Amino acid sequence: MNKKIAVLGSGSWGTALAILAARNGCQTLLWGHNQAHMALLAQDRENKRYLPDLAFPENLTVTSDLAEVAGFCSLMLVSVPSHAFKDTLLKLKAHLTGDVQIAWATKGFNPDDGSLLHEVVADIFSAQTPAALLSGPSFAKEVAAELPTAITIASSQPDFAALLADILHSERFRTYTNSDLIGVEVGGAVKNVMAIAAGIADGLGFGANTRAALITRGLNEMIRLGVKLGGKQETFMGLAGLGDLILTCTDDQSRNRRFGLALGQGKDPTAAIQEIDQEIEGISAAKETFLLAQKFGIDMPITEQTYKVLYEGLAPLAAVQNLLAREQKAES
Image (cartoon, rainbow, N blue to C red):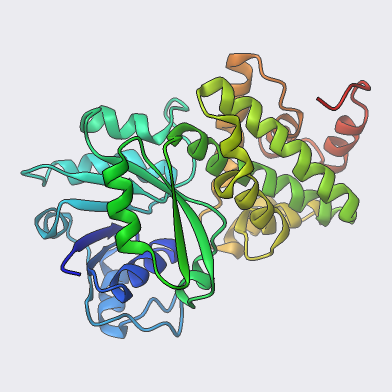
């Protein structure tokens, strides 16, 4: 392969994707905004903070200079937190002189107005700009360690989805394409809210019954919001819906689940965030999801109670009691 890709975001997931692309023979440039951190990555040839003991391939280089990124290639894979997504693209655009293709592995909504990230891409560039999202059940450490993983690449442009699949697909990393960009985006954002809720339930000492019920009813909430926004119901039964939901609600590699566990155990939220020391996307996603549910009149009780715990100081046990006290109803 004689392909190039720039990965924007040097956290665990961005680094893992950059390593994957480079291992597949792609000339890869990894960008991070912190100059000192990127200097360490260049010196150590690994990301000791987020993915220790995983050496960079020779064809993976690093930079903190967006001008260098803009001059390296036209294919960008953005893996920054959702709150930094818009600003990163705006700064990148200032250095671009030609066409660009934008893919992202960011999961969440635009915190400015709750819009979907493909809408942010279209606003900054154009509706014709090739755009795609990577999502699905995938922990960065396991991808970098070459443990078998399957993800979805969602795009309304099949040729662009196929290009990304060609770059990322390997014997241990399987890529499926999907045309339902909205459904995949909603699934990737809302599952983090449910992971916090699942963590809270487990932190309170509830069992597997509770967790299974929460995941199932959480999926129902995800579908209701996703379909209302224009997604397809079947998308939520796939990798980027149910698959990612199960992963992040049940495994302690999930930052969102660990944060919920801490809350359920009575720990201070600020201390829990500092202890995890990585982005916890579900915190902002809970607010944005709750506001969207309010805007469209969608019943999302798990989301609502999680929002109240995070933003209104509701005690976690009281949130569970509120859910159990809801009026009896048919399942569907």
